[in-house]
Image (cartoon, rainbow, N blue to C red; front, side, top):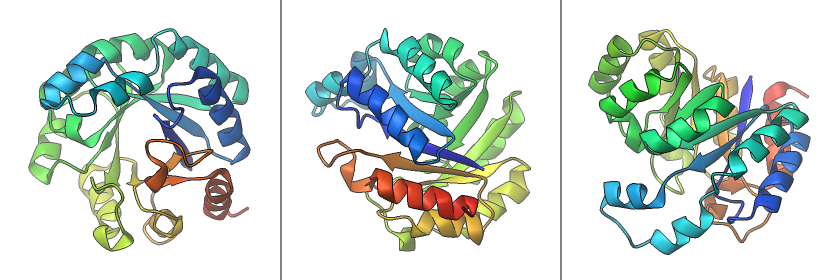
Length: 234
């Protein structure tokens, strides 16, 4: 069972906090920690939206963070995972990761996925912005291992927004490992995804305080540890 603590941008642009979050996430029984990395001018230009420019620029990890965070994950016995948002950020992170996580909006960009596949890494794709036709094309085109995370691209979302039977449907259709990226408050939806529908990966946002960008969809250490222990039957 792969339990991913999505630190994302909840480190608030502070390297020491990011390192502390890795250590605390380890104590919460996760197997993987995930960050986001992007080039701010490309990210905002691609989306034609500069309303959050200053915030996203402040929160983005610096390039020199990447080997430091990778080393800390190795010390903690955790997998280091990153979501890049363009080919240049992907090139920067690929020497340090075993897998590359692709966010839902980027999964619809087959040319981007084709580039990522040239890096030779296992791809973990969130499904919130793609349909079966697009996924069929991805699996027909890419020649690297792929896992899927069923998700709903709504922040925050509610359990009623999810159809957890999609997990088994996707697994049967694509013959790959399927999990959930859950943007609900609380832990019940993620636990149901595993216990009732066989999810093999759980990704949940992780926080250590309430003053972070994704606080509304994130679990604190106590909540995260409870979820991980129930999933693992501890």
